[in-house]
Length: 230
Image 1: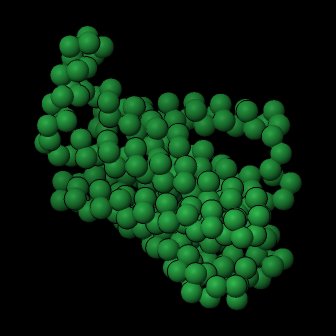
Image 2: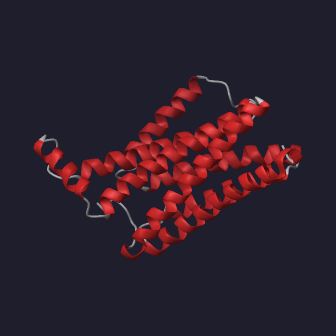
């Protein structure tokens, strides 16, 4: 089974886009942390933590793809370590573990963001069931890759629904930009389900990049305006 669906000509751009996305998400976390220190609003902190977890998922994907795409010394070392330990006869297990953590952390981050709005931040039996299902999806997505994107798409739809209510209530430009970013990310994850078609994967990555760029613009806008928009 093919591990990734990146066309050969898009390999460098694929890694660069994910690295750029990681930087944006990490920057958003730092901004949220700073905003929390000023406002003491836990919702802001949780939003930042959610994006940080997604960023760590991207980092896992970046590291795995660096080993997968490029002929580096670490590739041979990892392969030799696995072979000599007699776990498996190929280095595939390294890639599966790397992408497993990418999927798991990304879904956990999205779920954390979904739980932020009012009445969604209490831990219950439903919370543990959801975490279990996310773990199962992350494991099964090794064989059925579209399960991960479908799950991310569904969670993003729930996030969009919740933040739409927040926007209708507050009418803030910043909330609208955040909502727009989530909508674009939802579209990206929907199209990712057809990643077996190489060009679709490329289109999906670029759509996702647009969603993250809007997050970057949002951070810059808030930092620029200072206390004008909260």
